Image 1 (cartoon, one colour):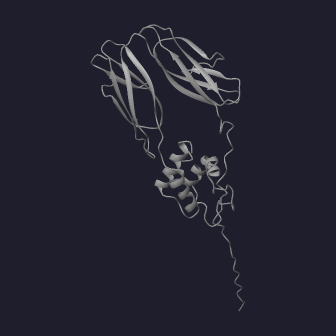
Image 2 (cartoon, helix red, strand yellow; image 1 turned 180 degrees about the vertical axis):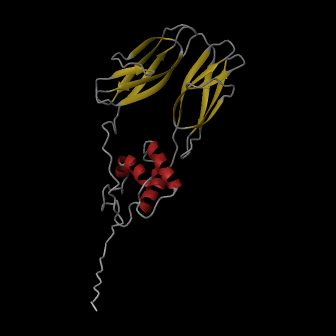
Image 3 (cartoon, helix red, strand yellow; image 1 turned 135 degrees about the vertical axis):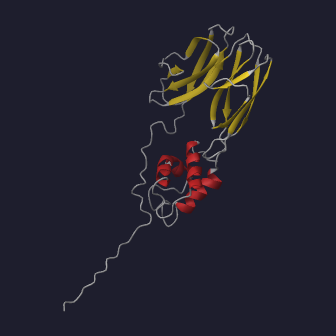
Amino acid sequence: MRGVVIVLVLVWVDSCTYEHFEKLAVDKCTGSTLSIALIAKNASTCTAADGSITASATGGTQPYIYSVDGAAFQQNNVFANLPSGSYSVEVKDSLGCKATQLTAVNNNQTNIKISVSTTSDTGCPTPNGAITISVTGAKNPIQYKLNSGLYQSSNSFTNLKAGSYSIAVIDSTNCQALATVTVIRNGPSFSTVISTIISTNCSINGCHNGGRNPNLSSYSEISSNGGAIVGAISSNMPPGKSLTQDQINLITCWINDGAPNN
């Protein structure tokens, strides 16, 4: 009878394996300081096309070029011969980085005055911001419009994500008034929510706290690896200890909010 030889092979599994956690290439516009400010001049009447917008860009890398409502970019920072309405102005620098700002060209004929109250967007992942519009000087019936949507009789808009919005109000005289408003982000806090999730699940046992790349032990490392983190936690990280969907939603929402150090 032949002897039986049993060979034991010990395989050590590194629980911090992160071969699928690839750091995304840093976009050339990450951290860009490019911004744009706008000054609008009213049109003279509801139907006249004699309003204008002057754009002023700062930051980024000069020279700048400008576009309004998706039209071809131009070197001139003044857009003239505009009728009253809402406009989106974009600036692009020599690196191709962009910044966008909404504004409204009103008209001197209307007596409608707009005031707006907002509710911050705290929803993750479902937006829950809101805008409520109040007007004076308008003749009933009054209708309200948000961005390029349809006019409605209600003066409230709900379930809004953070960002800038254009508002139009029109009354029975068919003359409109316009304004722009920002719904503020007020999502999950980095210091009390995001850092706790990552330190508890991603930076233990030597994982991503200096023992593995990327290092996720500080705000700067976490924020700069935001895109990679979102991809990893949605697929294969952390190994053997998946995050809950609520935790994934919170991190994703924080990254989409611009990874604020709040």
